[in-house]
Length: 461
Ligand SMILES: *[C@@H]1O[C@H](CO)[C@@H](O)[C@H](O)[C@H]1NC(C)=O
Ligand SMILES: *[C@@H]1O[C@H](CO)[C@@H](O)[C@H](O)[C@H]1NC(C)=O
Ligand SMILES: *[C@@H]1O[C@H](CO)[C@@H](O)[C@H](O)[C@H]1NC(C)=O
Ligand SMILES: *[C@@H]1O[C@H](CO)[C@@H](O)[C@H](O)[C@H]1NC(C)=O
Image (spheres, rainbow, N blue to C red):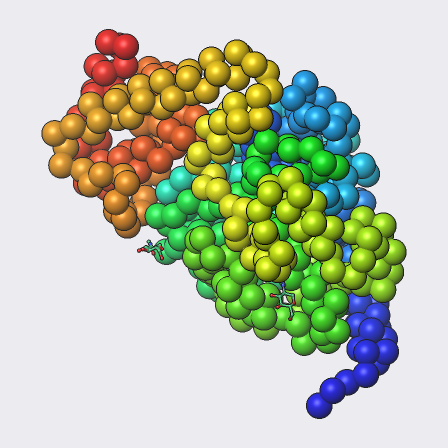
């Protein structure tokens, strides 16, 4: 049966009012990285802020963490602005950041925000003030490895620590239902076998435990106002969940029946480079998307869309522009295909960033030196880990190892030992912590040998 559009938008408005009255909506948005080569994470998070605000969230019910080092970076071609899609809108204007700087965007702040623990933070800091009638939505975008998510100074948010904070929130009735969307490599390992299914918490992740998640709108599709940004503007899972939210009303969908379940099915189709998976209380998926992400009023925002894209087909202008600049026919690509085609693996983001600087001949000799240095650094790290893992009979990290951590103390202490003996774990290096997981799960003996190897190998470099 075809329901007239007018009825749908009216019922959506009524429904959204009903939700607003019954429930208190909160959102926590976190970008866990810094540096221009990680541009996409902060762009994702500011774009999600803009979306939630448009969808009816008030400023005081969104808590946003982002280092905010990008808009004034000398390599940002558009100072003071951030873009999350080619020729898209500036998502920085109005993006209200509550915790900025590497010293504030930390796992400690994250836990305190979720626990509503203002005493752990500077006076006047914003924390969750949600209760048993609140729907809480969390979106995190950054790097991750098996068993942890990363924060800007290479700190780890371990899966068991997140799990304890979620348990605390449950015990203290800090939500009615809670939904987590995680854009990070190996993000399934944050919940697989860990998150209980009886807490009313539902988590959707961008990648399975052994996979990278993917950036998108990457070079050479990274065009803003005729200029290459030299990297990825967004991430595939992040862009896709935001797009499905907007698309639901654009397609005349009835928002009261567009559920998290529907969104999940769509995300599984759209995110082609990694497996979108979900964990926790799957009954939450029967709730409408609008109960956590609000309602996008297509009618209201049509004007803005037109101003940006100059037409009904949101990506028409981009395609035309890209065709001219890429000297390649991509006319046949629709918006979903563009997201897929312009993707890159997250762990190579820095190398790709430096490489596109070379191709576009920016920063002259400096770019060449930085590119060469990054390759040398990667080779050195490869070499260090060959030696660290030697003679322990561990499975090569490039193969699918499927070993998930249970001994987080061991994992954490090996990571700390690596950092103090060998230096920080950069984005590319993170993959090798899968060796630490394997050694810890094999037993104390293996972990001790590995720990000795770390000291021995790194003292000789
Ligand atoms: C709140 O923060 C304080 C100070 O860091 C800490 O001592 C306390 O344990 C925290 N409370 C909770 C519930 O996490
Ligand atoms: C996760 O939290 C639940 C309580 O919510 C607890 O029963 C379980 O042991 C925790 N798992 C881990 C790995 O920390
Ligand atoms: C992750 O997905 C890849 C590709 O579909 C698959 O080969 C691999 O076995 C999966 N790993 C896990 C842990 O499910
Ligand atoms: C938007 O809706 C169209 C038509 O239903 C669908 O083909 C497309 O996959 C959707 N895209 C997104 C990102 O939701």
